[in-house]
Amino acid sequence: MAKMADDQQVAVQKTAEELKRQQEKDAADRAQFISNKVPKLNVDGLDKGSLENKVREMYDTVCRLEEEKYDWEYKLRKLDYEISELNIVANDIKGHFVKPALKKISKAEQKLAKIAEVKSKLQGTGGFRENLKSTGQSKYAIDDKDEGGKKPEWSQDALKQHKDDDGLAGEATAPDEEEKPAEEEEEEEEEEEEEE
Image 1 (cartoon, helix red, strand yellow):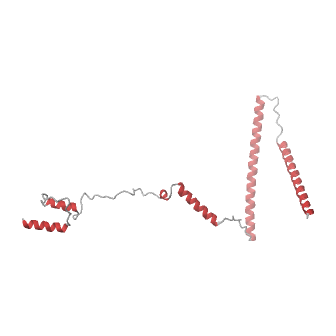
Image 2: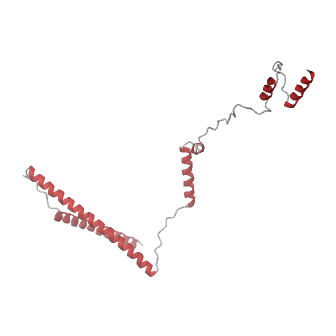
Image 3: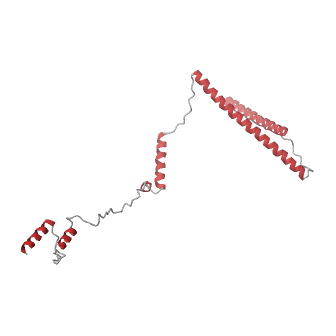
């Protein structure tokens, strides 16, 4: 058992050393490539005009390299697209379809998240009543429609006015006296007329 642990440690150390060597080699290759592509900059002893020319040359080089970079990126995207299209065609021909990897989501967590979102919306805006749409009418408004100021014939005001019109304005009623129904008042009027 101890021998297996030692063998594993040796394998891990060898892998780590190989990885370090590979990284150092990649860094050296990159530095060499850059030194070949970009020559060293010598600005010692240059006057203002020659410095400006040097800056223009470097600017042109940067622009040219950016154009090349863009072209290569475009070509890579185009090739990736073509590869994916060809894979789809090959799968269609073979009859194999690649199923996309689906994300596993707990339904309970999703429902709780929706409920929490709705609660936060309601609490954030002041509650349910504030989220209701307004009808444009005041809820305390009274619907009083004057129909030309006329009241129905059977109303108390109309009956009093009717009495006044008949010439009974001289008879005053006591404020404590209860108002009588319209039929009783008509009967009293008839009796008064008979007496006269």
